[in-house]
Image (cartoon, rainbow, N blue to C red; front, side):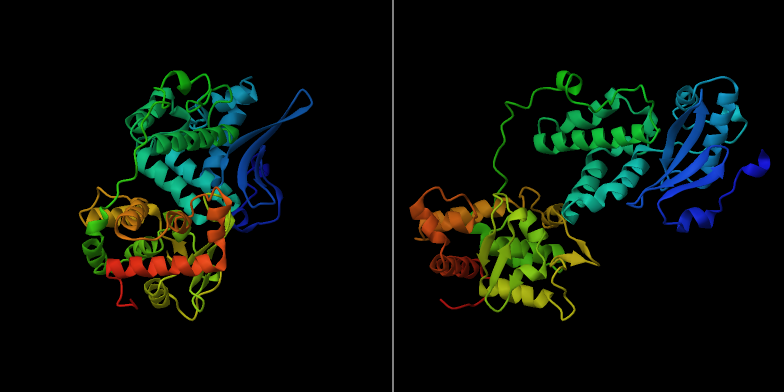
Length: 405
Protein backbone atom coordinates (compact mmCIF):
# COMPACT_ATOMS: atom_id res chain seq x y z
CA UNK A 1 0.00 0.00 0.00
CA UNK A 2 2.83 2.38 0.93
CA UNK A 3 4.37 2.04 -2.50
CA UNK A 4 1.12 3.19 -4.12
CA UNK A 5 1.04 6.44 -2.14
CA UNK A 6 2.70 9.79 -2.82
CA UNK A 7 3.13 9.30 -6.55
CA UNK A 8 3.11 12.98 -7.39
CA UNK A 9 5.99 15.40 -7.09
CA UNK A 10 5.74 19.06 -6.19
CA UNK A 11 6.94 19.93 -9.69
CA UNK A 12 4.21 17.86 -11.33
CA UNK A 13 1.40 19.51 -9.43
CA UNK A 14 2.89 22.95 -10.07
CA UNK A 15 3.50 22.63 -13.79
CA UNK A 16 0.93 20.21 -15.24
CA UNK A 17 -1.67 22.15 -17.21
CA UNK A 18 -3.54 19.41 -19.10
CA UNK A 19 -7.15 19.09 -17.87
CA UNK A 20 -7.89 15.86 -16.04
CA UNK A 21 -6.97 14.12 -12.79
CA UNK A 22 -3.50 13.44 -11.41
CA UNK A 23 -3.45 10.47 -9.01
CA UNK A 24 -1.32 10.66 -5.88
CA UNK A 25 -2.52 7.28 -4.65
CA UNK A 26 -4.75 6.21 -1.80
CA UNK A 27 -7.77 8.01 -3.28
CA UNK A 28 -6.15 11.44 -3.52
CA UNK A 29 -6.28 13.27 -6.87
CA UNK A 30 -5.54 16.74 -8.18
CA UNK A 31 -8.31 17.72 -10.59
CA UNK A 32 -7.44 20.29 -13.26
CA UNK A 33 -10.29 21.90 -15.18
CA UNK A 34 -10.17 23.32 -18.70
CA UNK A 35 -10.23 26.79 -17.11
CA UNK A 36 -7.10 25.94 -15.15
CA UNK A 37 -8.71 25.60 -11.70
CA UNK A 38 -6.88 23.04 -9.54
CA UNK A 39 -8.76 21.22 -6.79
CA UNK A 40 -7.76 18.37 -4.50
CA UNK A 41 -10.39 15.59 -4.39
CA UNK A 42 -10.67 12.30 -2.53
CA UNK A 43 -12.34 9.41 -4.37
CA UNK A 44 -13.53 6.09 -2.97
CA UNK A 45 -16.03 3.35 -3.78
CA UNK A 46 -18.99 2.62 -1.53
CA UNK A 47 -21.26 -0.32 -2.36
CA UNK A 48 -20.02 -0.27 -5.92
CA UNK A 49 -20.73 3.44 -6.30
CA UNK A 50 -18.01 6.06 -6.80
CA UNK A 51 -18.00 8.87 -4.22
CA UNK A 52 -15.93 12.01 -4.40
CA UNK A 53 -15.17 14.78 -1.95
CA UNK A 54 -13.42 18.09 -2.63
CA UNK A 55 -10.57 18.81 -0.19
CA UNK A 56 -9.79 22.37 -1.26
CA UNK A 57 -8.21 24.52 -3.93
CA UNK A 58 -4.54 23.84 -4.71
CA UNK A 59 -3.81 27.54 -4.12
CA UNK A 60 -5.04 27.11 -0.53
CA UNK A 61 -4.19 23.48 0.31
CA UNK A 62 -0.62 22.32 -0.30
CA UNK A 63 0.36 18.85 -1.52
CA UNK A 64 1.52 17.91 1.99
CA UNK A 65 -1.70 19.17 3.57
CA UNK A 66 -3.84 17.34 1.00
CA UNK A 67 -1.97 14.11 1.77
CA UNK A 68 -2.61 14.58 5.48
CA UNK A 69 -6.30 15.16 4.88
CA UNK A 70 -6.50 12.10 2.65
CA UNK A 71 -4.70 10.01 5.30
CA UNK A 72 -7.17 11.20 7.96
CA UNK A 73 -10.14 10.30 5.75
CA UNK A 74 -8.71 6.85 4.95
CA UNK A 75 -8.29 6.20 8.69
CA UNK A 76 -11.85 7.26 9.44
CA UNK A 77 -13.19 5.16 6.56
CA UNK A 78 -11.30 2.17 7.97
CA UNK A 79 -13.05 2.81 11.29
CA UNK A 80 -16.38 2.42 9.53
CA UNK A 81 -17.36 6.06 9.09
CA UNK A 82 -19.03 7.37 5.92
CA UNK A 83 -17.06 9.59 3.57
CA UNK A 84 -19.05 12.69 4.50
CA UNK A 85 -18.71 12.06 8.23
CA UNK A 86 -15.01 11.39 7.81
CA UNK A 87 -14.56 14.73 6.12
CA UNK A 88 -16.97 16.76 8.28
CA UNK A 89 -15.72 15.43 11.61
CA UNK A 90 -13.33 18.32 12.16
CA UNK A 91 -14.36 20.74 9.43
CA UNK A 92 -11.79 19.27 7.07
CA UNK A 93 -8.90 20.63 9.14
CA UNK A 94 -7.97 18.51 12.15
CA UNK A 95 -6.02 15.33 11.49
CA UNK A 96 -5.01 14.43 15.01
CA UNK A 97 -6.89 11.11 15.00
CA UNK A 98 -4.77 9.95 12.09
CA UNK A 99 -1.65 10.33 14.19
CA UNK A 100 -0.40 13.15 11.95
CA UNK A 101 0.39 16.79 12.58
CA UNK A 102 -2.62 18.99 11.80
CA UNK A 103 -2.16 21.48 8.97
CA UNK A 104 -3.20 25.05 9.64
CA UNK A 105 -6.94 25.43 9.02
CA UNK A 106 -7.95 27.33 5.89
CA UNK A 107 -8.93 30.85 6.87
CA UNK A 108 -11.74 32.88 5.37
CA UNK A 109 -9.26 35.46 4.07
CA UNK A 110 -7.05 32.90 2.34
CA UNK A 111 -9.98 31.06 0.81
CA UNK A 112 -11.70 34.30 -0.30
CA UNK A 113 -8.57 35.36 -2.20
CA UNK A 114 -8.24 31.91 -3.78
CA UNK A 115 -11.92 32.03 -4.79
CA UNK A 116 -11.56 35.47 -6.38
CA UNK A 117 -8.49 34.31 -8.32
CA UNK A 118 -10.42 31.28 -9.59
CA UNK A 119 -13.39 33.27 -10.93
CA UNK A 120 -12.17 36.81 -11.69
CA UNK A 121 -11.31 36.06 -15.32
CA UNK A 122 -15.06 35.96 -15.90
CA UNK A 123 -15.54 39.47 -14.50
CA UNK A 124 -15.63 42.23 -17.08
CA UNK A 125 -13.33 44.79 -15.49
CA UNK A 126 -10.50 45.22 -13.00
CA UNK A 127 -12.51 47.70 -10.94
CA UNK A 128 -14.99 44.94 -10.05
CA UNK A 129 -12.12 42.76 -8.87
CA UNK A 130 -10.74 45.56 -6.75
CA UNK A 131 -14.15 46.28 -5.25
CA UNK A 132 -14.50 42.63 -4.21
CA UNK A 133 -11.12 42.59 -2.52
CA UNK A 134 -11.51 46.02 -0.91
CA UNK A 135 -14.97 45.37 0.53
CA UNK A 136 -13.81 42.11 2.14
CA UNK A 137 -10.60 43.72 3.38
CA UNK A 138 -12.13 46.92 4.70
CA UNK A 139 -15.40 45.64 6.14
CA UNK A 140 -14.90 41.90 6.76
CA UNK A 141 -11.46 42.05 8.36
CA UNK A 142 -12.82 40.33 11.48
CA UNK A 143 -13.48 37.20 9.38
CA UNK A 144 -10.12 37.16 7.63
CA UNK A 145 -8.13 35.03 10.07
CA UNK A 146 -11.02 32.88 11.25
CA UNK A 147 -11.10 29.27 9.93
CA UNK A 148 -13.62 29.23 7.12
CA UNK A 149 -15.40 26.16 8.57
CA UNK A 150 -16.00 27.96 11.89
CA UNK A 151 -17.75 31.08 10.58
CA UNK A 152 -21.31 31.30 11.87
CA UNK A 153 -24.23 33.72 11.84
CA UNK A 154 -23.04 35.94 14.73
CA UNK A 155 -19.70 36.39 12.92
CA UNK A 156 -21.44 37.59 9.77
CA UNK A 157 -23.82 39.83 11.73
CA UNK A 158 -20.86 41.39 13.53
CA UNK A 159 -19.32 42.66 10.27
CA UNK A 160 -22.61 43.71 8.66
CA UNK A 161 -24.39 45.43 11.56
CA UNK A 162 -22.05 48.47 11.89
CA UNK A 163 -22.64 49.47 8.24
CA UNK A 164 -26.04 47.95 7.53
CA UNK A 165 -27.94 51.25 7.83
CA UNK A 166 -25.13 53.78 7.42
CA UNK A 167 -23.63 52.25 4.25
CA UNK A 168 -26.62 50.30 3.01
CA UNK A 169 -25.48 49.55 -0.56
CA UNK A 170 -21.98 48.57 0.54
CA UNK A 171 -23.40 46.30 3.23
CA UNK A 172 -25.77 44.57 0.79
CA UNK A 173 -22.94 43.86 -1.63
CA UNK A 174 -20.67 42.68 1.17
CA UNK A 175 -23.28 40.23 2.41
CA UNK A 176 -23.67 38.76 -1.07
CA UNK A 177 -19.92 38.39 -1.46
CA UNK A 178 -19.52 36.65 1.90
CA UNK A 179 -22.36 34.31 0.94
CA UNK A 180 -20.65 33.37 -2.33
CA UNK A 181 -17.30 32.73 -0.63
CA UNK A 182 -18.91 30.48 1.98
CA UNK A 183 -20.91 28.62 -0.70
CA UNK A 184 -17.67 28.01 -2.60
CA UNK A 185 -15.96 26.80 0.58
CA UNK A 186 -18.78 24.32 1.11
CA UNK A 187 -18.51 23.13 -2.49
CA UNK A 188 -14.78 22.60 -1.92
CA UNK A 189 -15.44 20.49 1.16
CA UNK A 190 -14.11 23.09 3.58
CA UNK A 191 -17.47 23.50 5.31
CA UNK A 192 -19.87 20.80 6.39
CA UNK A 193 -22.17 19.67 3.59
CA UNK A 194 -25.08 19.85 6.04
CA UNK A 195 -24.39 23.40 7.18
CA UNK A 196 -26.53 26.38 6.24
CA UNK A 197 -24.84 29.46 4.84
CA UNK A 198 -24.69 32.04 7.68
CA UNK A 199 -24.67 34.89 5.14
CA UNK A 200 -27.84 33.70 3.37
CA UNK A 201 -30.53 36.36 3.11
CA UNK A 202 -33.98 34.84 2.59
CA UNK A 203 -35.36 33.27 5.74
CA UNK A 204 -32.14 33.99 7.62
CA UNK A 205 -30.44 37.42 7.79
CA UNK A 206 -33.62 38.95 6.38
CA UNK A 207 -35.28 38.31 9.76
CA UNK A 208 -32.22 39.19 11.84
CA UNK A 209 -31.10 42.54 10.37
CA UNK A 210 -33.19 45.75 10.34
CA UNK A 211 -34.97 46.70 7.14
CA UNK A 212 -33.12 49.09 4.86
CA UNK A 213 -36.34 50.08 3.13
CA UNK A 214 -36.71 53.41 4.90
CA UNK A 215 -33.02 54.28 5.04
CA UNK A 216 -32.55 57.82 3.78
CA UNK A 217 -29.96 57.81 1.00
CA UNK A 218 -28.49 61.29 1.03
CA UNK A 219 -26.59 63.02 -1.74
CA UNK A 220 -22.88 62.38 -2.14
CA UNK A 221 -20.92 64.95 -0.14
CA UNK A 222 -20.09 67.75 -2.58
CA UNK A 223 -17.76 70.74 -2.63
CA UNK A 224 -19.51 74.13 -2.89
CA UNK A 225 -18.80 75.41 -6.40
CA UNK A 226 -17.41 78.69 -5.05
CA UNK A 227 -14.58 76.69 -3.41
CA UNK A 228 -13.73 74.65 -6.52
CA UNK A 229 -10.87 76.90 -7.81
CA UNK A 230 -8.98 76.82 -4.49
CA UNK A 231 -9.48 73.06 -4.22
CA UNK A 232 -8.23 72.65 -7.80
CA UNK A 233 -5.04 74.54 -6.97
CA UNK A 234 -4.39 72.21 -4.02
CA UNK A 235 -5.12 69.16 -6.17
CA UNK A 236 -2.69 70.25 -8.87
CA UNK A 237 0.09 70.35 -6.26
CA UNK A 238 -0.34 66.61 -5.63
CA UNK A 239 1.89 64.21 -7.58
CA UNK A 240 0.01 60.92 -7.17
CA UNK A 241 -1.76 59.31 -10.15
CA UNK A 242 -4.93 59.36 -8.06
CA UNK A 243 -4.74 63.16 -8.20
CA UNK A 244 -4.55 63.10 -12.00
CA UNK A 245 -7.53 60.75 -12.13
CA UNK A 246 -9.54 63.03 -9.85
CA UNK A 247 -8.57 65.99 -12.08
CA UNK A 248 -9.93 64.09 -15.08
CA UNK A 249 -13.15 63.24 -13.22
CA UNK A 250 -13.64 66.90 -12.31
CA UNK A 251 -12.80 68.27 -15.78
CA UNK A 252 -15.18 65.85 -17.54
CA UNK A 253 -17.90 65.72 -14.84
CA UNK A 254 -17.82 61.96 -15.42
CA UNK A 255 -18.74 59.23 -12.99
CA UNK A 256 -15.66 57.84 -11.30
CA UNK A 257 -16.21 54.32 -12.67
CA UNK A 258 -16.29 55.68 -16.22
CA UNK A 259 -12.96 57.45 -15.71
CA UNK A 260 -11.32 54.55 -13.88
CA UNK A 261 -12.25 52.17 -16.69
CA UNK A 262 -11.07 54.46 -19.50
CA UNK A 263 -8.59 52.94 -21.98
CA UNK A 264 -6.56 54.83 -24.56
CA UNK A 265 -8.53 53.32 -27.45
CA UNK A 266 -11.62 55.27 -26.30
CA UNK A 267 -9.83 58.62 -26.48
CA UNK A 268 -9.09 60.60 -29.62
CA UNK A 269 -6.75 63.42 -28.70
CA UNK A 270 -6.90 64.85 -32.24
CA UNK A 271 -10.65 65.43 -32.14
CA UNK A 272 -10.67 65.83 -28.33
CA UNK A 273 -13.45 63.27 -27.90
CA UNK A 274 -13.71 60.50 -25.32
CA UNK A 275 -16.21 57.85 -26.39
CA UNK A 276 -17.37 55.83 -23.37
CA UNK A 277 -18.90 52.50 -24.47
CA UNK A 278 -22.41 51.66 -23.37
CA UNK A 279 -21.38 48.73 -21.19
CA UNK A 280 -19.56 51.14 -18.88
CA UNK A 281 -22.32 53.75 -18.73
CA UNK A 282 -24.99 53.76 -16.05
CA UNK A 283 -27.71 54.12 -18.68
CA UNK A 284 -26.24 51.43 -20.93
CA UNK A 285 -25.77 53.80 -23.91
CA UNK A 286 -22.49 55.02 -25.40
CA UNK A 287 -21.65 58.59 -24.43
CA UNK A 288 -19.41 61.06 -26.26
CA UNK A 289 -17.51 63.38 -23.94
CA UNK A 290 -15.98 66.52 -25.52
CA UNK A 291 -12.63 67.16 -23.86
CA UNK A 292 -11.55 70.65 -22.87
CA UNK A 293 -8.05 71.78 -23.77
CA UNK A 294 -7.10 71.24 -20.13
CA UNK A 295 -8.30 67.63 -20.26
CA UNK A 296 -6.40 67.02 -23.50
CA UNK A 297 -3.26 68.51 -21.97
CA UNK A 298 -3.65 66.27 -18.90
CA UNK A 299 -4.05 63.14 -21.03
CA UNK A 300 -1.12 64.17 -23.21
CA UNK A 301 1.13 64.23 -20.15
CA UNK A 302 -0.02 60.76 -19.09
CA UNK A 303 0.21 59.09 -22.49
CA UNK A 304 3.46 57.52 -23.70
CA UNK A 305 4.47 56.13 -27.10
CA UNK A 306 4.08 52.64 -25.65
CA UNK A 307 0.45 53.16 -24.57
CA UNK A 308 -1.66 50.42 -26.15
CA UNK A 309 -5.34 50.95 -27.13
CA UNK A 310 -6.50 48.49 -24.45
CA UNK A 311 -4.28 49.96 -21.73
CA UNK A 312 -5.96 51.71 -18.82
CA UNK A 313 -5.33 55.43 -18.70
CA UNK A 314 -5.11 55.50 -14.93
CA UNK A 315 -3.07 52.41 -14.13
CA UNK A 316 0.23 51.64 -12.43
CA UNK A 317 1.99 48.52 -13.63
CA UNK A 318 -1.17 47.48 -15.47
CA UNK A 319 -3.33 47.75 -12.32
CA UNK A 320 -6.04 50.40 -12.50
CA UNK A 321 -6.55 52.90 -9.72
CA UNK A 322 -9.73 52.61 -7.67
CA UNK A 323 -12.31 54.78 -5.98
CA UNK A 324 -10.53 53.99 -2.72
CA UNK A 325 -7.34 55.61 -4.04
CA UNK A 326 -9.20 58.87 -4.68
CA UNK A 327 -11.01 58.64 -1.34
CA UNK A 328 -7.67 58.25 0.43
CA UNK A 329 -6.31 61.20 -1.55
CA UNK A 330 -9.19 63.37 -0.32
CA UNK A 331 -8.47 62.29 3.26
CA UNK A 332 -4.79 63.16 2.90
CA UNK A 333 -5.85 66.58 1.63
CA UNK A 334 -7.93 67.04 4.76
CA UNK A 335 -11.17 66.75 2.76
CA UNK A 336 -12.50 63.42 3.93
CA UNK A 337 -15.89 65.13 4.06
CA UNK A 338 -16.05 64.98 0.24
CA UNK A 339 -16.73 62.13 -2.18
CA UNK A 340 -15.47 61.69 -5.72
CA UNK A 341 -19.00 61.43 -7.07
CA UNK A 342 -19.91 64.69 -5.33
CA UNK A 343 -17.88 66.70 -7.84
CA UNK A 344 -20.64 66.05 -10.39
CA UNK A 345 -22.97 67.97 -8.06
CA UNK A 346 -20.36 70.74 -7.77
CA UNK A 347 -20.31 71.00 -11.57
CA UNK A 348 -24.11 70.92 -11.80
CA UNK A 349 -24.52 73.65 -9.16
CA UNK A 350 -21.95 75.85 -10.89
CA UNK A 351 -23.74 75.41 -14.23
CA UNK A 352 -27.09 76.40 -12.75
CA UNK A 353 -25.91 79.25 -10.54
CA UNK A 354 -23.12 80.84 -12.52
CA UNK A 355 -23.81 80.20 -16.24
CA UNK A 356 -26.54 80.63 -18.83
CA UNK A 357 -26.10 77.25 -20.51
CA UNK A 358 -29.43 75.49 -21.19
CA UNK A 359 -30.56 72.91 -18.65
CA UNK A 360 -30.87 70.23 -21.35
CA UNK A 361 -27.26 70.75 -22.41
CA UNK A 362 -26.08 70.48 -18.81
CA UNK A 363 -28.07 67.28 -18.26
CA UNK A 364 -26.57 65.77 -21.39
CA UNK A 365 -23.06 66.71 -20.21
CA UNK A 366 -23.82 64.71 -17.07
CA UNK A 367 -25.09 61.77 -19.21
CA UNK A 368 -28.52 62.00 -17.61
CA UNK A 369 -31.57 60.66 -19.43
CA UNK A 370 -33.04 62.95 -22.08
CA UNK A 371 -36.80 62.35 -21.96
CA UNK A 372 -38.23 64.20 -24.96
CA UNK A 373 -37.47 64.98 -28.59
CA UNK A 374 -36.48 68.60 -27.92
CA UNK A 375 -33.87 67.52 -25.41
CA UNK A 376 -32.81 64.60 -27.60
CA UNK A 377 -31.81 67.10 -30.30
CA UNK A 378 -28.86 67.97 -28.08
CA UNK A 379 -27.32 64.61 -29.00
CA UNK A 380 -26.37 65.90 -32.44
CA UNK A 381 -22.91 67.01 -33.50
CA UNK A 382 -23.76 70.66 -32.88
CA UNK A 383 -24.62 69.75 -29.29
CA UNK A 384 -21.20 68.14 -28.80
CA UNK A 385 -19.55 71.41 -29.73
CA UNK A 386 -21.91 73.30 -27.43
CA UNK A 387 -20.99 70.91 -24.64
CA UNK A 388 -17.35 71.50 -25.47
CA UNK A 389 -17.94 75.21 -24.84
CA UNK A 390 -19.46 74.29 -21.49
CA UNK A 391 -16.49 72.11 -20.50
CA UNK A 392 -14.03 74.80 -21.61
CA UNK A 393 -15.87 77.34 -19.46
CA UNK A 394 -15.73 74.92 -16.49
CA UNK A 395 -11.98 74.40 -16.95
CA UNK A 396 -11.40 78.16 -17.09
CA UNK A 397 -13.46 78.66 -13.94
CA UNK A 398 -11.39 76.06 -12.11
CA UNK A 399 -8.20 77.77 -13.23
CA UNK A 400 -7.11 74.59 -15.00
CA UNK A 401 -5.42 76.51 -17.84
CA UNK A 402 -5.29 79.84 -19.57
CA UNK A 403 -7.44 78.81 -22.49
CA UNK A 404 -9.40 80.93 -24.94
CA UNK A 405 -12.11 83.08 -23.48
